[in-house]
Length: 195
Image 1 (cartoon, one colour):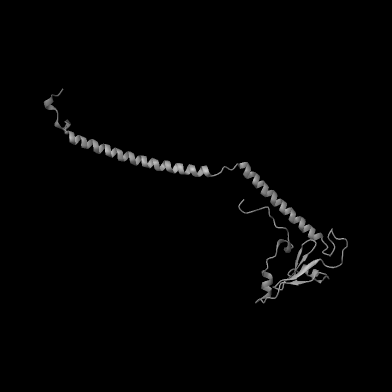
Image 2 (cartoon, one colour):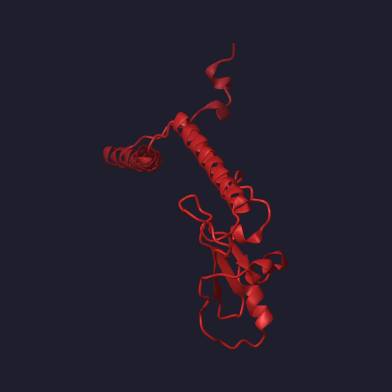
């Protein structure tokens, strides 16, 4: 075992002595640093807690929607579309079966040989007619409707007035025809965008 005289000086830790004021200053700096670090940590946690609380408040204001309620609404929309499709099909069938003669409605006592179309001349010079029995709309734009304009009628032709267009044919073709005027198949209303 080596003696104390043989111990190398490199293993000796020098010891420093502090007076009271120096020790107080070191402790005060350590406490202040710890307080700053603690305040910073609490502030970060407070910010995170505030975000969590704000999100919870937002979510609490969103009303709960029962999945059965959503399913029920979808079923009701589908039923409404089907009902509308059937109404259009029934209207189309009624218009196809109508003889378009005066007095041919079920409420009339006698049928006359005159056309039941009320004819109107638009300011674009297009001539349209509306059956007073079934509300079918005919147009001078469709060749298959022209025969109805030749049938005698007791309805007086009306007119919207006179306007001059640069090109009357473009003005006539610019009028958008409604579904029941097109004479085509009933549009499919069962598919709607967004569902």
